[in-house]
Image (cartoon, rainbow, N blue to C red; front, side, top):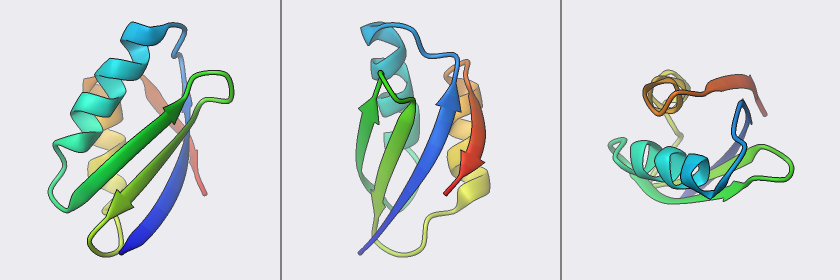
Amino acid sequence: MATSTYTVKGMTCGHCVSSVEEEVGAVTGVTGVQVDLATGLVTVDSDGPADGAAIAAAVEEAGYEVVTPS
């Protein structure tokens, strides 16, 4: 199991959080997603190393932008 954290720009409400959780949660291998609206941090748990490009694409599909993977 692996955990990675991303900073996401543009989230302003609970609906934003739900959208990001839903899109990122659908990425193959992702087992859990936690979004902190106040900090913009998205923590992703996955079976193995997360596919950063797929995570970023899912965030963009939700309408937001990954600023920096950490």
